Length: 172
Image (cartoon, rainbow, N blue to C red; front, side, top):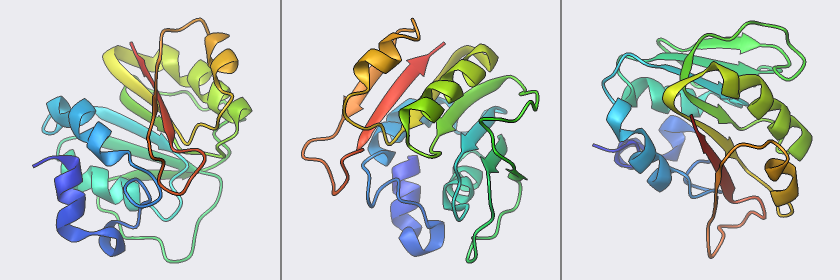
């Protein structure tokens, strides 16, 4: 079962994530992440709102260590079993990061924080790991080019209902 099929089997009200409602990310994630479904990997997601994407990751990545970071807690957050949630401003934190296989930025959605995420997280990615920046606005190219890292930009057409329905993928 892919991560998209898992989401479809229980739906938005169970997982409470916009990764297949306002955005079109789960079909891409199904392809990108399938090889790690049962592996003992480490995942980081920054910007976890009501924790729904962490719940989805817990159920899909059965042997993963999952870390979520957000600068606040939200009423109505879904219950979690294994994921560790850290409440702090990731972008200004000096917390040491462990080696990561998957890292997802779903934070403030502004280019400055997205670039800060890449600069901070990319050095901690394991060989073969993938870093994902979600919700990238138009006009990103020169900013991401300035990082000097090869990346893939994916824009969804037609876009859902969001101007930021784009992903940046950076492989290590």
